[in-house]
Image (cartoon, rainbow, N blue to C red; front, top):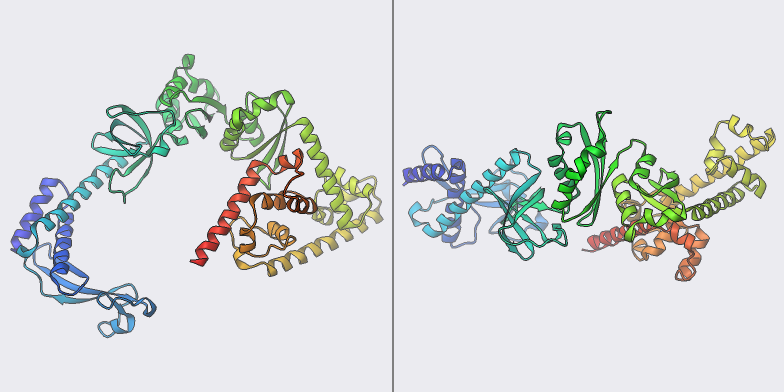
Length: 520
């Protein structure tokens, strides 16, 4: 009988073109299942087949678990009990005891066959998958085999993949037998069905199609630096040439638009803007917002945002239909873009100057004239006044030496007071709030002034309340919250931009998820 095991393993391995080890593992699993079924007690079994002789041994085993997790004496064992068998055993290992091997012929033939065939099918599928992945193909070109609950099953040779319904372009409608091209989004090795998860909406799909149409991209002469998409409607693709003699935009467009039109036709008519990439981020943003003409850009490195100023005639063009143009430009460049007219920009600059002036008057105890001079000279924080080189302050014509020394002394005292206040806030804030992703010291300071010192208190806020606390001056934020935002001005609405509101919503969501996880 043992020889029959070896013959069976060898025959199946050659017939199915799978490693013999896979067959042995399937046989061991079938024998272990049969051992468990034939045993009167509910046990965990393991079978080990000798690959040379075909002899096999059976074992009953118990998993070593902590005392507080010990609930199943038939299959579990506490560590102190395990050490009575073997002192070298550790938590999470197994204690085994030999069993009388069951005869091979007593296994239910159908059950053994199913286990073995399933293992063989899994091995064959894995082999096909590995062959496909070894080619590093980003695109799959196949035929629609069937439609399953809106998901499109695609067959390409021996490889099968699935395009989930949410990865299909909305206006597309495929039927069985249609040719389809898609991007390999990921591999799901745990899936029972197709393991290749495909997409026609991923930004990478556009990049892969251009690489197929433009040989210069495959050769590395032209690089695709970024892609942003509104699938089926519009896309922006940033390109860069590594050869100064080559125009990357013209090369990607092709003669009479032949190359870009091929990609557009594949994407159900999706309009594609080819943008010239620039190392200078401001210039890159200007390119990305084309054809709108930009008047000026103010960069906020701390918030990773830009205030983009355009004249009134270009504002609608820059925003695009439903905000599409600015949204794609923001996604393409990786910067938060706040579009505003020249009038809005001037109002915002004036509001910021007033805020800074009031802050200097309050913290340095100076009059409006001195505070305005500091603002005009480009100072924005008390720390800058306290620690810039002395010569910079002395260079201000309106200040004499005594004024400079007094300003530095007051600024350093104010900075020290702020630092002490920060330490007190950090001490008083709960650990679950301090460790929450997205909460920094500056936000902790603002939240503490509203009495919010725990994660639960943050979770109770509405997103617009948190957005106001983060963005607007304290007194104004309190007034708006108390008034249910009834008198929110256009300028304040501009300050509380869509991205700020989204960030506030995400932060509150994380706080609530953390609370529910802790409660469970």
